Length: 143
Length: 180
Image (cartoon, rainbow over all chains, first blue to last red; front, top):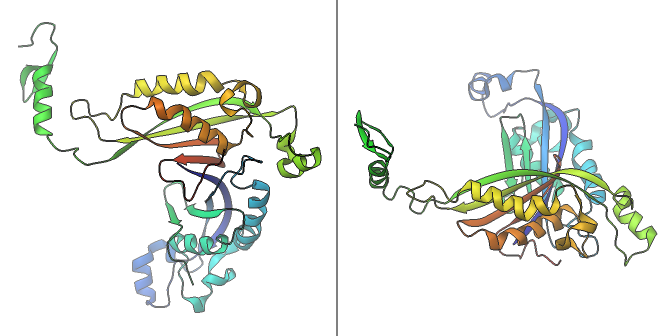
């Protein structure tokens, strides 16, 4: 059997789906209202899943007192109340990475994979209650 | 014409007995489920108390590792358990297993043992272990495994709160080796 632990976090951020590879008109056609020039925002929920042996001394895969500050430092501080297109390094205009929630999954996975106490297994993001995206260990990451 | 006592239904405007309907269903759906793995999940909730304390560690270490969960008076949660069974639906019933049967198994193996109990003192399956979400998922997996005879136990997910859950899933133990 395999055992994993999942913790749910949240942050609020704004973004605009837009790529300089396409014209304004094409951006509008591909991304629709998500391409409105002033951006818009979401309350994101992020599920972080880690796996590994259960330490017999603590009964835990990872102590939340270690996981929570790590996620706080690597993810929440960097994304909460921010404009993803301009305030998150991975989405800087010269990187030409559109801040879709698919790409957000890869970026967050990349930021959290260094977690020292257990293996990062999956990052799942709910952009709204109707849309969710996930990336699993083994998938490639954003540069 | 409806046959007496046998029950019946309507097929293209004609009254036919249930037995005939079932035969017809098996014929028209022959092979439709073959090789298709379906997962079905049932959710139950229970409430229990626990605290985290390892007698092999000093009081200071216990407090450092477990924080407020170390409070010896304990605290409680409304747990939610999701049990997933995988298998092929039976061609006659359309079911992997009878959900009523699964409900009874969850009642006997989990609810009767754990609901409104103190996990540290009243649940022998957790004796000698820290009753974390992870260990609870493994203990419930071990309780259910021998009871699931139709379909395969695929996953046990235990929610301690809406923001925290542990999964115990079928598969090899390379990534999530259990040492309890």
